[in-house]
Image (tube, rainbow, N blue to C red; front, side, top):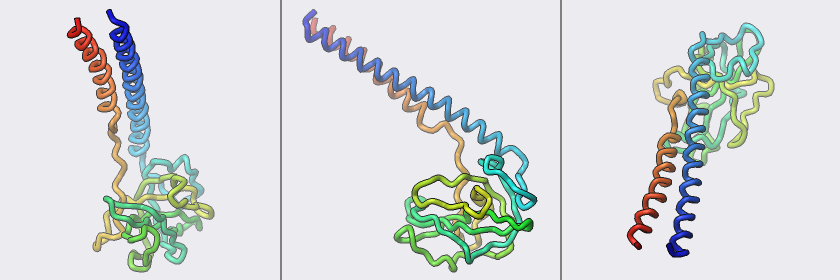
Length: 208
C-alpha cells in the first residue's frame, strides 16, 4: 500500500471519528431538550396560579400558567424593542397590571408593528382598563432591550388570551415543545462518518 493511501485512510478515520462525536453530541442535546420539555409540560399541567393574593416568587411562576385580575396602568407602559413577528419589525407592549392586593405585574400584551422596531404610538393599542388575564409566567431574557421588573412581581405574564377584535396587539404563540433539529443533525453526522469510511475504502480498492 502506498504512503498516500495510508495517509488518506488515516484522514478518513479521523474525519469519521469527529463526525461520530458530533452525532453523539447531538443525541445528548436531544435528550436534554426532551427532559427540559417534560419539565415545562409538567408545569403547564399544574393548576393556574392566581396572582393578587400575596407575594409570588419568580420560580413559582416560571413556565406556569397564571391568572390575574386588575387594572392596566397604561401611563407606565413600557415597550420591548426589537421584537419581530413573522419577519415584520415591531415592539412588544409591556403593561403594568395593578392587582387587588396592591402589587403589580408586568403583562406582555403582545406585538405591534414598528418600522424601526423601536418607536410606536402606544395609545393606538390600548385595551379596556379592567382586565382578567391568563398567560404564562416568564422570566424576561437579558439583552435585546431589557425588561426591568423593579417595582413589580419579578416575572412577566405573556398573554394567552385571544387577540383583540382588530388583531393588535398580536399575542405571542405558545412555545412549541418539540425535539428541534437535533435528531436530523445527528443522522447527518453519522451519515457523513459512513460516507467518509465507505467512500475512502471504495477509492482505495479501485486503485489496486
